[in-house]
Image (cartoon, rainbow, N blue to C red; front, side, top):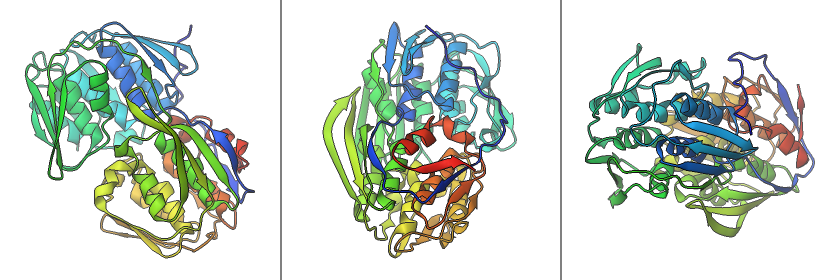
Length: 453
């Protein structure tokens, strides 16, 4: 029986990697557990009465930060074996005041959701993170959580470190999200668990609904209604959450990288088993199908309240696509690797409404355009849209990509290198471990030529 590994240093030495044109990729793999569900499983386990057992938990750095934070807030959090964890919860309203600052590392999801959780408890806490996270805006959660009665102090512009004084009697909110954001929605709902009455959140368009699914799984009453394009979620406050087992499916955002690699490396066929197929996370797969990708799903099933299946991708001749802004919430984390697929496609692809990419681990919109430009692919940013002028085959490659402390930029660049005409290098792959530990080794097992630069 062991606890989580020690947290890494904030500024480890850079780990440059390079990916070279590869032979056909083949094999069946499993990717790490879904990061969004892993975060939430730990948090709801900490709020439930009894012991929650979690199978398949992602053990990347982001999720380990959440595990450490739940432990600091008084829950018993224990790792029994790789991927197998137990959480003995404190019950809603029972969290303890942490003795030290809670360091969220690189995880915006952990920071924003835990802010909501703390806001509904009469405790004081300070949240911080690494240099990248300290540049990401927290005002979007500060505003609604302040209306619920919590008090905040932050750097100018709502930047971390963030001091939170939770509300002794949090108020239920009726809150319209200014922009579609699963993180803000979830923060409001987590705070609403401790409030008397009904908390109501209105989304301008649907975002991933793992929080709603997990609320039901642990025994809360949640109602969801569609009102035109809007989605209305109602939560009955102060339920008694009961411990419930959680089986974490494979992360579709992680599965995107080996699947896109198979699409762009000639002769490839790769299967990723046990991938989450939540309809509000499946935008990438729909988009790739529109591009002519040969993708098939087998063995569909339900695990832990989430749809799951085995996805196979085969090398395909891709064509350009115009993706509407309404699809962005269902694939917001996959745009960098989708842009890589578009670089191999025939014609000009346009991805609309990507303003949310500007406030990810990096300005991910600018970083994606720079990734492509460094490797001979013409890309333009027009307002909040990204245009990618496809090569109709392998792009030149040969560039050095600045990852900007962003794990998805690093992995996307390496995927590009596997199918390009010349190798692609990244200046630092160390941040990949925040979401996809073992990425390079897994890809090498499929036949990818990825090595230290």
